[in-house]
Amino acid sequence: MLNTRDLEQRWLRYKIKSYVPYFTILISTVIISAIIYTFLNSDKKETTYIPEKTNKAPTKAPITKEVVLNTPKAPIVKETPEVKSINSKEPPVIISKVQEKKLSNVKDDSLKLAPSLGFMKNIQHATLPYYKEEPTKKHEKISKIVEETQEIEPQESIQEIVVIEKEEEKEEAQQINIKRRDDSNDIRDIIKRFKKNNNPALSLFVAKKYYELGEYHKAYNYALITNQIDRDIDASWIIFTKSLVKLNQKDMAIKTLKKYLESSHSGSAKILLDEIVSGKFK
Amino acid sequence: MKIVLLLFLTLSLYANIKQEMFSLYQNEKYEKVCTIGFDNFNKNSKDEEFISLYAFACLNSDYIDRLATPVAMLKFSKESRSNSAYFSVILMQKKLLYHALQDNYDLSTLKLPTTDYVLSKVFDLYSKLKKHEPRAFYLFEDEKDKKLTYKLYLSKDGKLNKMVIEEFYDTITIKRHVYW
Image 1 (cartoon, rainbow over the protein chains, first blue to last red):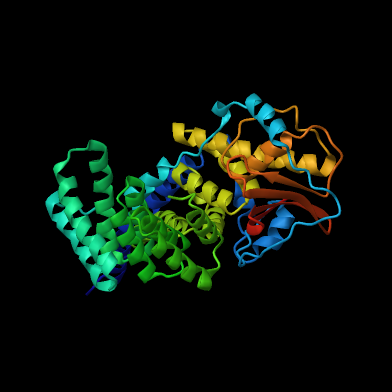
Image 2 (cartoon, one colour):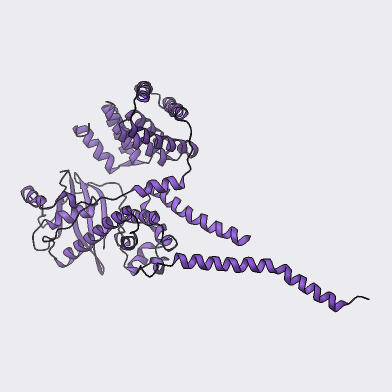
């Protein structure tokens, strides 16, 4: 005959033992999370104010809630620029140049603080993947993009620019310039990423970088690509026309800016057009 | 196992927030970056890159008072300390200029560092004025570009007066900054 009591007790022990691993995992995770939590909040004492108390404020209705919290907000008006006459009954105070000069001597240039944006490079390197290849292969890929732009833009003058660019690329390849090679490595990585995700921000960055390096043909090409992906990026049109001016295509630059201004009424584009027409920007 | 997975998920979520903020920043969506940063600040209060990104986004979207926390928190690296000083100057200049406009406080005796930010430029131009009677508005010419002018005035809006800086280029309004 079976001893049911003994059997039941053995079953109970077996059942309890089966739960042991779950309990250990649970307890260990609780301990680990407690340690992490205390570690993260270890220097809370140092900071007097942390915005968590108010962090539910701004997402849905930022303006009204900020007023309550006394966190000022200053919206940038993104309306189309209007011509405003600055008239008022009271005479405006315009500082005379003599007074300005006298006082500006007092203020030292060394007192000017500038932002440090190096951390952005770190973020970029940390968040976006790298695709390292041999430099020769990368060079071929750059020229492929150049060829693509040739197909996109049927105008003869642009084709000429691209042909000149290829010749110049060969010349540049022969030169040894350490600083420039570092920059071009960065650019190549970004071009790689751009080819993967077609993000206009990346092509715009490449265009800007090439413009800074004085490689206006490439800057032109990448600005053109950016414009084709997204026609509403102001900065891209500006780099595009600036590159055209640098490539001695002033008339074309003016024409392009005028056309762009018809659709966008961009303030900065208007300023650039003014500067190009007046010869201030060369 | 589920808990471990959850932990990994949360960690990757934190990383994604910074990445998302960075790509938004690159696309010049500063106000959105500032708002996201504000909402997730406590979770990332140890990350100086996050704090710096948040602060620059808030600066570019004219949320100057939000710089107060980054000013206090950025201290561990040389770059952070430099940015902290940069933000604190702008914050101080905003407060002083507002005080001067509201209460006719004399700024001409002060000698402060400056920055390339529009508020600093206007602050410098205003502080060059000697003690004077309050005006309805001030027009300043940019020192480098004659066509660029700044209009500074107080906008009386309900209980609180707001400080407005308008940037003009050849009588065309380029930008309007409102602070209070």
